[in-house]
Image (cartoon, rainbow, N blue to C red; front, side, top):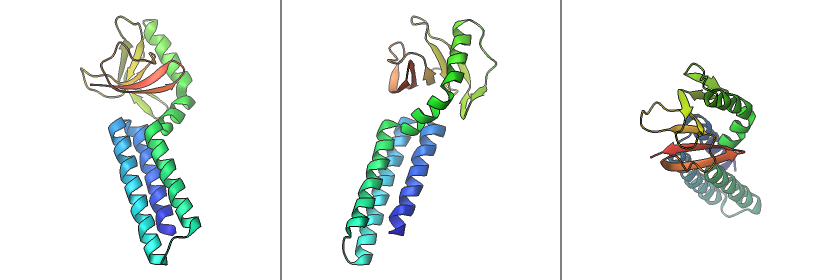
Length: 166
């Protein structure tokens, strides 16, 4: 029983770290999938070692797999972390719209913001977390991202979303 719990703990830590620190939706999904396979394998190993399925073991493994899948699909760690620091994003968004951008790079909680601006056509402020000159990967106050060339979008609640441009 210890092996599935250890694997679940490692999987949860990995998905949370990738979701908050790296923020690449593909990697969050991949880490979740790898974690699900690892938990399943650990569960099979545990069942074989004990000579049969115990209800307690099976339920712990299934619950762990559901939690890990849910985190990967909803990007919950990023959403939760953003909600804590949302006032900082609102403040910086107002600065950008008002024409007084802060000095970049800067930090809002654990998020490093390397650049920012206001998108033409929508007036939506954006805060870039990557240094790609022709892509905006970062936070935008435009929940549908209609003025951006989207690869992925994660609504964060309120009027903010995390986007990755293609």
